[in-house]
Length: 234
Image (tube, rainbow, N blue to C red; front, side, top):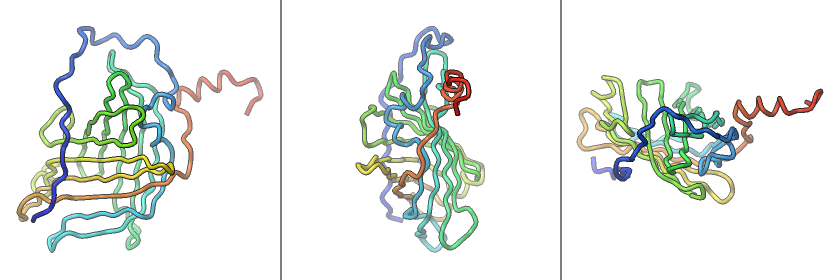
């Protein structure tokens, strides 16, 4: 079918890494919320009733409206040797007005590397698929674009044998926009090779989410805060 396909953004060039791959940063700020860069505006609990999904069916594209509940919780700083990430663990739960059963469930992490501006989204869904998407940003950016491609090991897509056979995912792209009113929106597109159908299908989800609860500090900050609290506080 003649469906526009999502554009992918390839990260430029291989990175240069240090010879010492074991030594971790000596001084690490324990406050994740203060070091999330552009991801700070994702932290918290969010809701929406205005999601829209376009997915492939045998008779043609199906359009569904959905509600969404999303939680983004700060995690402690994470080090791969000298590489340092700050991030959010997230869970997105989606339902449709027509059904009580879960329409979509997704867990994963959003990560920010302050030293390089690297942004990662790692996600998995309970149908046998996982994605590691990557992009670049600055702390002040109001727009994030992350992509992944089937076959890549640095930012790629892995699926079960059945999904590879019937609904092969060739590309993934998410665009997040932070809105002036404090809400945020996303456009999520995946290029699917659907068995028995010509060309690639552009599976598309869009939504705008509103914050309903502020985030708590990351676990280490809560421990440090409890130690510093005067006796009898709280």
